[in-house]
Structure formats: structure tokens, C-alpha cells
Length: 245
Figure (cartoon, rainbow, N blue to C red):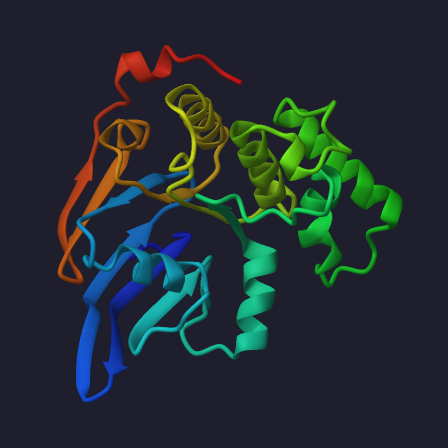
């Protein structure tokens, strides 16, 4: 595996104890994701997608095996250490947006900066960073809007701005278009495609084969194992033709 990889997992297993029964959610998975890759993870229900995403996002620890994130072994870190890693190195985009309903768009985007341990960033700088992030997602006029005052597509853009605010090494997107209509979903996928073109490393879970076409690599899971790992020669022209946002 490459020393420059963003993700290096080696023989990862995850076993859950349900009463007297042991359930193997992940069974010896090894995977390498390089900087700038756009990887899609697919598979039927129960295949291990969510478990793998939780481990990649440092939301859970493997039962066995190792996980290096940007060269740092996070496999056995404490909960506090994992929380720090999530804040510093990972940007999350969820199907349900996970925005604070009583907070404005600007306040939602600010949240990762509030928890950031780098105290040298002033409040003025934080506000400017959050505002610029919203501008980059076409939301310059939504700073003071709350989630209930925005469409689903706009809420997901706020979530993407929040994910990008700390310049993460890795963006994890879990069914990012699952709650959106087809037009808004396409816009979100074009944003992710543009981020990928700018050098972002993205790992996305999706059930949508059309969404998978935006990525350059597709990983299929089945019964906790990698069933297929496909690199696509190029993104289809009809996807690229969607334009930039």
C-alpha cells in the first residue's frame, strides 16, 4: 500500500455480539484510497456499507485490523482522539443533512470551527471562512436562514459547506441525494464532482447507479467482504455535461 494514501485499511473485521450470537459485519477487508480519488461504495442491505463508513469516519473502531487515515493509525484511538480526528481530517455529508434546526446556515457551517482546537483563529476569521464557504456553494444570500426556511437542496449545500470548512483530508458522503428530488440530487452530485476535480478525496455510499457514474471507482460489498472493486476509465460524457455549480 502507498505511503501517500488517504485511506489504508488492512484486514479490517467488525464483529457485533447480539445476545449469544456473533454477527460479522466486516470480514477481513483491505482497501487503499489515494489522494484525489472519488470512490463509491455499493451493496445490498446488510453488506457492511454502513459499518465500513462508520469505521472510515472514525465513528466506530474495528474489532481487528488496522486503519491508517492520512498516515495516522486511528484503529485503537480513544473516543476523545477519534473526535479530534473527525473534526480535523473528515468532512461528513449525510442523507438527512444533520443541521441544527434552530441555527442559521452561517452558524451551522461554523460548528466545526467552534470545536476546532486551533485557538489562533479569531471569531472574525471564522465568520469570514464560513461566509466564504456558503458563497462557494451559491448560498451568499442564505447566511441568516434556518434549515426550515430552505429547500432540501439548499440544506444539503449548507451541509457540504460545513463539511469543507476545515479543509478535510477526506469527505465522506452517506446517500447525499437520498432525500432530494432528481434535479436537486443532480446539482449535489455535480458539486461533488467539481470538488473531486479540484483534488478532494471523496468516499460516498449510494444505492443509485446513476450517482455511481460520477465516481472513478466503485466498490461493491457483499456479506462483509469486497465483492468487486472497479476502476472506471473515464466519467461518462453525459455526466460531465451536467455543468458546474
